[in-house]
Image (cartoon, rainbow, N blue to C red):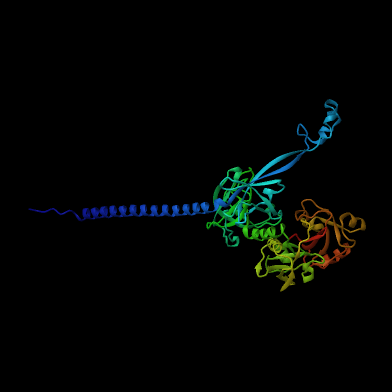
Amino acid sequence: MHTLKPPFRTIKTIAFFVVGILLFTGSAHSARADAKDDIEILSRSSKAFTSVVKKVTPAVVHIRVEKTTNNTGGMLGGGDDFYNNPFFEQFFGPQFRHQQPRQFKQQAQGSGFIINKDGHILTNNHVVEGADTITVILSDKKEVKAKLIGTDPQTDIALLKIDDGDNLPVVPLGDSEALEVGEWVIAIGNPFGLSQTVTVGIVSAKGRNRVGINDYENFIQTDAAINPGNSGGPLLNIHGEVVGINSALYTRSGGYMGIGFAIPINMVKSIENQLNDHGKVTRGWIGVGIQDVDENLAKSFNLKKAQGILVSEVQQGSPAEKAGLKQGDVILRLDEKILNNVNDLRNQISLLPPKTTIILQIIRDGKNKDVEITVGEQPADLSKTGIGSTSGLKQFGLSFQNLTPDLAEQFGYKRDQGIIIKEVEPGGTAAMAGLRPGLLVDEVNKQRIHNLKELDKVLQQSSAPQRVLLRVRNGDFSQYVVLSAE
């Protein structure tokens, strides 16, 4: 009898089939294991968020304020001119004339958080500004009247206090300097009156300034949803520590659009201490006009790169003048801390107590130098307005005239202080730089000028006629401006 053996090809096919089944079974098992691991990771992340919320939410409060507002609109909501119009009086009689202002109560709301067992609460100034009464609604719905300890409108921070026993829940304050872009953050507050609302996002950016909300800005930007009513509530890191106070949102619709701003808690700590101790904030001041250094200014001041902060003005009798700081100095560091822009320096100086001694590292005439300054107290009437910018010549769309006694009196300058901008050509280089008639130019290419004759002399000596550096003055403030046709 003959035995038939399966051909080799058939055996090979069966072997591949078996191996395939085993591999499929193994990969399916591996896929199920990976999916299970992924779910575990998500579960742990979810529990981390809920843990933070459970721990912190009791210390987050709803703030309701009531303020008195005057209405001079009369019966129909119009203005005084409408009711005092003789035509109106002819039909309705003189009793409708001279409508007296009517007062009515207006309510507003926001958020806040308890920072110590004494009952101190941090929130935004704009939440409580002008309030007649402030009511704090705790997480257990209990309502308590709050006392306003102090406010700082320039940073939009306010400190309140409630008296409600010794068992108040407290939220710890973290370190906003240690916060990094991309980290998870949690916002808790009362948007649209919906108390204890929690949203989650990441840190989108740090050090946001020139947003135009406060005088001193160093915002944390986040995509955690912040809406009206969130103001004053905490922005938390994943450890349940406050890293910022939710303050504002960027919106074109009135609601959330993915960009919110929080005041860094490190800035808040210094303000809170002063408000608690004195009820107000005393700011440091050195008395300089400053501006960022761009590529044009870097070339004009022979800097290797665009860096630091240019001193455009040193006020007479100021701490900066006493320390020997000069116009044209470029500030690089404050006590070993690198300064990135004007707001960096302004914020840090403002948070220093008067009589603090600091070291500014500067560049003067191409050489590094340290200047020791004793910080003064910011004057109460310090102007908040800066200078526009600009200057020019004919090729830059600019014309000047000598500063006559009449012009000096008209624009508030001293006689022979410089030359005044007469005309600025629309669309020209000077106009694009922001120059306008009435601004004073007292320095050209780092040389002091008092009249048109001196201007011509300086320009004739220039080795680069297509480029000019001007120091432009607007009242008591000055700024360097570069005009270039290159």
